Amino acid sequence: MHFVVCIKQVPATTSVQIDSKTGTLKREGVESIINPFDEYAIEEGIRLKERVGGKTTVISMGPPQAEQALREALSRGCDDAILLTDKAFAGADTWATSYTLSRGIKMLSEPADLIICGKQASDGDTAQVGPSLAEMLDIPHVAYVRKIVEVKPGYIKVERMLEDGIDILEMSLPALVTVVKEINTPRLPSLKTMLAAKKKQVHYWNKETINAEEDKIGLKGSPTQVMKIFYPPARSGGERITGADAKEIVNKLIQKLSSHGII
Ligand SMILES: Cc1cc2nc3c(=O)[nH]c(=O)nc-3n(C[C@H](O)[C@H](O)[C@H](O)COP(=O)(O)OP(=O)(O)OC[C@H]3O[C@@H](n4cnc5c(N)ncnc54)[C@H](O)[C@@H]3O)c2cc1C
Image (tube, rainbow, N blue to C red; front, side, top):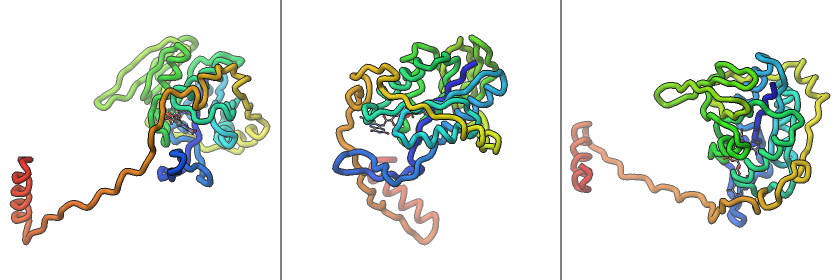
């Protein structure tokens, strides 16, 4: 079976600075890592291959430095890596990102049986790309998967995490799942897989390779428009209620709340 894992390279920090002139994030000089949720997607892709046989391909859309994330996935045991990279992909919103990934996946020499995404990215944080990619590929999907109970050609059974329990769902394959961190514990690369990865190549695919329609990629193909990007104003401190003891403080608080009509 063919397992395809989508990974995104993200800044290693949640405090990326904003360029006030361009309204974009300042990514230069910021260390990059694999999106933390995608670590679980990679691990699951490798485990499934080990469980039922086949191969695991890892794919990312991003600038050339995203090769580093793909190399890391290869060193853990993925078999093949594709980097969708082209200046024309820059400025993509989640729609254009999903379209570009869908074109890349359609171009794979061996069709994907199961596509695995992380639950969400730590920078964009929308959790839209997985479901949107499944729609563009016209295949079923389940989000928040915490366990793959069974997988075999044409069939998958999964557990979806809910706030108050789980759903057990079956789908026909090909399908897509987005996974939560409860699904596994990601492994570290072993010496054997690291040495094997050194011989592997990361394939660079551009807009021509994936036969992408110009008006569906990058900024031009993005229906979302960022009107303004800014830091929210810092909150001024609230009023501190003091008193000799807890009883006095509570009484003052009750008076305050009732004077504002809150209680
Ligand atoms: C108008 C606009 C312009 C933008 N311009 C840029 C820009 O120039 N550069 C930029 O980096 N971002 C840009 N973004 C942000 C970009 O759209 C999102 O980061 C991207 O679409 C992924 O969405 P997300 O981060 O919310 O991922 P989520 O939907 O939260 O990710 C869920 C999962 O989808 C998969 N996934 C997500 N993105 C990728 C990817 N690129 N490759 C492979 N798998 C992936 C991963 O498995 C991930 O765990 C822009 C956004 C807007 C609205």
